[in-house]
Image 1 (cartoon, one colour):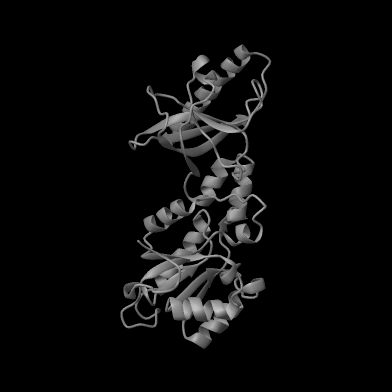
Image 2 (tube, rainbow, N blue to C red):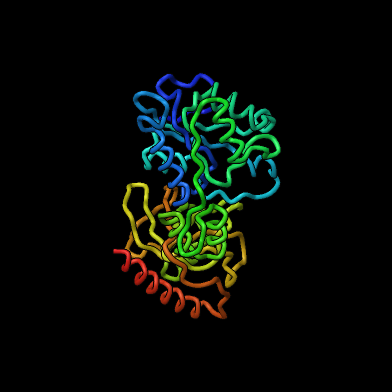
Length: 316
C-alpha cells in the first residue's frame, strides 16, 4: 500500500482514485463496509474512467477531536501505524494522511472538496459513512458532499449505519466496551481482538516472587481499558504467540500505584525485558480486588490462570 502524507504533489499513479474518507479509528466492521464500497466504486464504469481507478483511503492526523480538545485525553483504538497496517491488510491501494492543523481546520466544506479532494487528489469517487462531517464548523455533511460531487464531477457513495444484534458498529461504542472491560464484545465489533503493543520493562518482581513472573508494559494514560484480569494472547518479538493471563490495575494489595499491564505467559520460560510484545485481549475474567493476604492473592491467581487456560483453549 502506498502511504501519501498531504495532498500536494500526489504520484501520478494514485491521482484520480476512489477514496473512502474518515477517521477509521479501529478499522472496525462498520468501517470495512465503507472500504468495500470504495473498492466497488473503483471498478470500471463506476469510477468515471475507462479502466477503473485505485481504491484508497483518506484519514486525518491528529484525530480532529484531539486537535480541537488537546487538553482532553483521547482514547485511540489504533495508533496511526497500526491503522495503516490494517488498511494495507484489507487491500487498499493507498492511504492519504492529511495533517489536521490550523490551516486545514480553517477550510470550508467546499474548500476541502475543491482544494484537497479535487485539485489535490483528483478524486473520482468519494465514499463516507452516514455520520461524516467536514469543513470549518462541521458545515459539510453527506448531502453537502453529494451536491459538491455533482458540481465538481465525482461520484459519491454514502454508507448507512450497519451493526449486529441491535448495536451499530462505531468507534465510540468500542471505546465504551473496552472501558467496561468487555473485550469480547469489543472484538466482535472490531472483527478481531483489540491489541496493545509495548516494550517489556522491569517491575517490582512481586509476580516472580509469587511464582507468576510477568511481562510488564505501561499503557498511555489515554487508554481507558477497564481494570481487572483478562485472558490474553501475547506475541513476542520473534513472532511466537503464547496464551497468558493479564492483569491491568493499580495493585491495591500492595501499593495502589500507577496502572501497569502485567502478563503471565502460561507456558513460557525466558526473559523478555526490553523486547516489544503485542497483547491481544480475548476475554474478561474478573474485576480488580484487594486481598487480605498474599496467600489469598496467590490462590486467586491460580484460579485466574486456570480460567484463562480454559478460555484460550476454546479458541484453538
